[in-house]
Image 1 (spheres, rainbow, N blue to C red):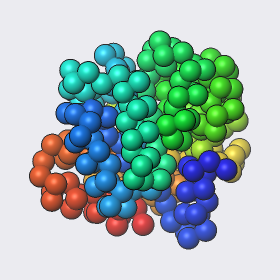
Image 2 (image 1 turned 30 degrees about the horizontal axis):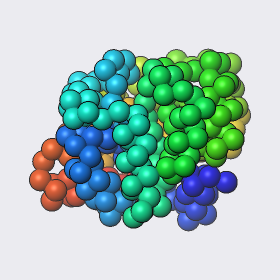
Image 3 (image 1 turned 135 degrees about the horizontal axis):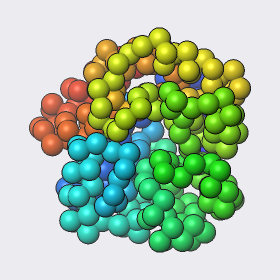
Image 4 (image 1 turned 45 degrees about the horizontal axis):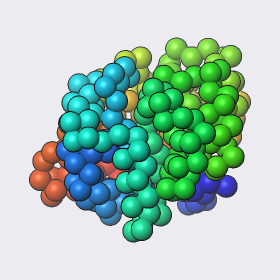
Length: 258
C-alpha cells in the first residue's frame, strides 16, 4: 500500500477525514515553498499537493495561474520540483502529490518521470488534462514505481466515466465539485453529496473533493460525505500574508475537517 493509501486507511480507522492543501512549488521561490510545506504539516495537513508550474494551466483560475507564472519566472521546472521533493524527504514523510499538466510530463518522458519521481519520494500524480483512456502507458510506468495515479470526476461525469475513473485511479479519486476553474465560488448543494454517493456505489476507494472550497464552513460541509477535502486557491492567496494569518486559517480548516 502506498503512503497515500496508508494515510487514508489510518484516517478511516480513526473516523477522520484527510486535509489536503495545495501550494505551487517555487512560488515565489523554493526556499519559501519549503517553509510552507513545514507550516502545512505543522497545521495538520495529511497529504500535500505540490503544483508544478506550467505556462497554460487550463483548469486553473487567476490565483494559481499567477502563482505558476511567478514560479516559472523563478526558473522552476519539472526537474526542479522532483529534486525539491528529494530534498524534502530528508525532513518529512508526509505523502506528496504532484499536480501538473501532461505537457511537462511528456517533455520529461513518461518512463523517466516515473523513475525519477519515485526515487525522489513522490507518492502520486494528478494530471487534469490526461483522462484515464489516454493514460495507459503513464499509469503502467507509475504503477511499477509505486506512484499513485489520481484521476478526476466532475458533476457532469456519466456513469461510464465514473466506472472508468474508479477503475483507473489509485490512492484516491479526485471529485471536482464545480464545472469551472480552480478558485471559482463553491455552491454547497445536495447534488455534490448525491454524486459522491453514486461514486461510492461502484468503488471503495477514497473520494476527495476539491475546487472552490475556501471557508471552514465549506470544508466542514464537504467532509461530511467525502473522505478528503482539497483546498488550493484560498491557501495560495493566504500564503502571501503573514505566517500567523496563514497558520490561523489552516488550523481553522483542519478543525472544521475533523
